[in-house]
Length: 192
Image: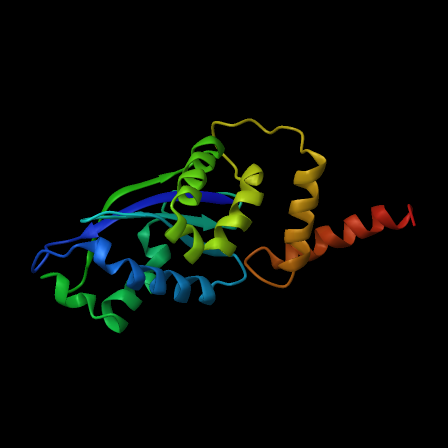
């Protein structure tokens, strides 16, 4: 699992828009996006909404992030804001509503700090509690290019196993998960 920090602001605004006044619409768009990708192949969590920018974390089930990964991964989120919530009126741009201010992979420590910050913002946390709590449980499995592989704790193993069972038929890695679960069952069966 990987996490990417994304900060977006409206490109070429047609008039001054205070995004803090649009937090509910942003959360609606996140919910639509997350429902579409309910299998956790990818998710969005809003970490902060400022007057001119929204801060997001995109979580991907992919074990390795391609070099060409971009904001296109959340195009259905952007499309929902543009069409269903009428955000096209906020920009003079016809094709690109947002400008990407930040887009980078988060390591485990930074992701943990960001999740703590979201939990301290009661409104944002309450609106996204299921997603934040699940990600918080899974943060130990977030891969990082800078973090060497370490032995997994028993609690982490149980969290990952539970995740694999819940999502075994979903996501890009569904066949791998099903195959690995069969191997795990074979190992565990000798202990029954």
